[in-house]
Amino acid sequence: MKLANLSSLALAVGAVSGHGTKGSGFNSNLTVRTSTGTYTGIIDPDYPNTLQFRSIPFAEPPVLSRRWLPPQKLSSPPTEHHYTTRFPPSCPQFVSAIPMFYNINLTKGNTIYNGYQNDSSGLVGEATSEDCLYLAVWTPTAAVPRTNVSLPVLFFITGGGFIIGGVDIPWQMPTSWVERSQSHIVVTINYRLNIFGFPNARGLEQQNLGILDQRAALEWVRDNIAAFGGDPKRITQMGRSAGAVSTDIHAYAFHEDPIAQAHYLQSGTVFGAAVPPKDPEFSNFTFVARHVGCEAPSGSDEDEDGAAELDCMRRVPFTMIENFIGQYGDRGETPLLSFKMVPDDSIVFTNYTARAEAGLIARVPVIISNTANEASAGTWPPQNLTEGPYQPTITALDLAVMVCPTFNSTVYRNRLGIPVFRWQHAGTFPNLNVYKWLGAYHASDIPITFGTYRLLDDIANTTQFEIDVSESMQDHLLAFVKDPLHGPQEIGWNPMVVSDPHGGDLIRFGSNGIVSQRVDGVEVDGACQGIGEYDPFP
Image (cartoon, rainbow, N blue to C red):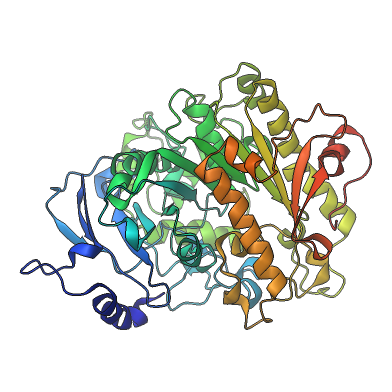
């Protein structure tokens, strides 16, 4: 919901919730007091039983001298009052001009909200800012003000390859889901991306700032979610794609204090993330610095610690930095520039196999899920949309990047006695699958999980089967969120044990007109063990 609709929303708030506290200027039924401020939320009239707090800061703005520093706790007085009527800007990110599946009309709203620009502008995102460390909360109206309510919390980390993503993405708005369930809370967060989140620059003690932002947000939720009717002891940390990799990174980096009672990895694990080798020369950051006016004087060796380079780069507008990196990439220039995870053996490790074998992982239940044909949408063939890409190559990518890393993650957790629940999304629907060769592609489960499938009704009408699959998937996930160990088993969903002769239990959603069904794990994982062939269209 964008700014143009806020007037009607404000009227609806008054109609639904009555008058505000006398002299306060805000409605006490829509307001919570946290350790960092007082916030008044909003009710969308289409979802009258769901209260939204769309923009709550969880750390100081990482700007000026705080650019490229770890997130710092908020210093604003807790008596300060804020209205949270619009979603926050996303962290700085570039909107590629290269046509791809994720920036065409078929998937509009999947990866970025770009203000009044189009989704292939070739410019830094219009609706982005360095002042971006905010989160959003969706909670049943009955939970606020809090009485004896203590609901489970789903803490969601968005995807986007560590270069795009954020709270304000239409496909992943959980409003209709919370409205339907009235029994859980959803929190979605921003975190720093690309060079601002993973700079790998000389002179910095911490390089994985985006992961630290996620942790700071999780700590804020732990400390404040009770004010929204949530239970701080029942937080499930969920991530999609890069967010799933991030959640797995947390499982290893913070294994002694995960905060979360459970994890959900949706299409991503550390074993499929391709952690890059260390770059002791910090070459990518310095390359960018040289091209935005921060090159050291010729022959100078006075900046060995990188202090001068950092000082200069902190004065360069973020738009100039993002546009240089993004347009350089769009032109296909070399050397390639990449700013993602930085192996430091503190937050991001160089050898996750060794960490897993040593048992240095959070001992909490986990869901790991994949779509059946993850890689199909990543190779967009505009000259051959009827036939699509060469499927054997796509299937090999499905296995190498998603299916087998998921199997490996399951194996290592099994050895430690960690319950692993698995599902595969195999559903295809008219409004998500204009081209049959796509199958159940990467991110096609997002509108099913969050119940946002009607956003695509301009492509084709939502079907009842699609709704049924969505509600079943939501119910399975909610059973886990409410009670990660026993909840799934109470509805007949058992932890996967890969040593079982049939590969253990796995739930498959949306295949062949069947909403959900139990299948043997070997049907999906067998190819990773040399047993049979993988079927991306089950």
